[in-house]
Image 1 (cartoon, chains in turn brown, green, purple, red):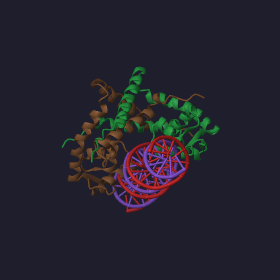
Image 2: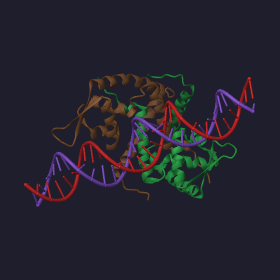
Image 3: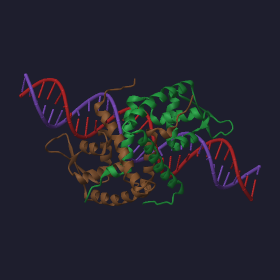
Image 4: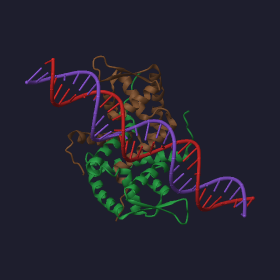
Length: 153
Length: 153
DNA sequence: CGGTATTGTTCAGTGCACCGACAAACCCGA
DNA sequence: TCGGGTTTGTCGGTGCACTGAACAATACCG
């Protein structure tokens, strides 16, 4: 029976793209702070005092995963976690000075890395790249909400 | 200090794309067999008797990861692992009948899923999508080989 | 032939990512 | 006010993914 050509499988390509990114991140940005961790710092720069769930929503991580990422950032002293006096279920998050400093440092490195990463594409191709990536992800995300339950045994 | 717009960060988009794919895979293809596992089955359909390292190379997984994936497939009885009599370092891998059957089944489901996944893009856009994805990944992969050691502390 | 280098696999450690189950806190209607 | 339903966070379990180190079998070379 015929094997399939994986280069026409978006899932396979997505995985490869992430690997490639991971590689560049490690060498050009940081070996300590990961890309999802940076995303969390970034959200908290824009919206200090957000709760854990909302942060997860902003960066696209579920509650379990965001809890781990945040705990790692807390252990490194990059953010603080305080119970919301208004609502005892939540923790309110904000960056420490250390965290803000780290975010600034990584921001410039990340910009450099993105340039290298996207160098193989022309200006217009980069725009197309972003747009297509986004459209596919958004559409799938939409299906999640609709969730007609196409379960598969 | 200004926060950054993550929608122009390819790493972030790559992660979101993979999440979207994972979601669709789970509901439309299989909850048991994952996409990387399918990739391994697929390689072994094309080239039975390959060793572990080569399989990893074909699907783009490092030695540690491929070892785990293969051990899971072995546990499920989808492939066999025999020491190479010619070279006692390797294990030769081939699908069991069960494994071949599984591959056939998932092949058709995967095709269906890819259609849904890519539905938001036109025919031409899909082609562009594949090409850009591939070019970026390949270029980064190339840097790995060159590896000028841009280490970052 | 024997010592050294290379190659294939495994192991330990870290981190991302999902799901389902659970407890505490909150909210709202009877 | 109290009792059911929702929301926030934690926990346990599984799986992918990388690095670096250890280990064994083989290959190469003087």
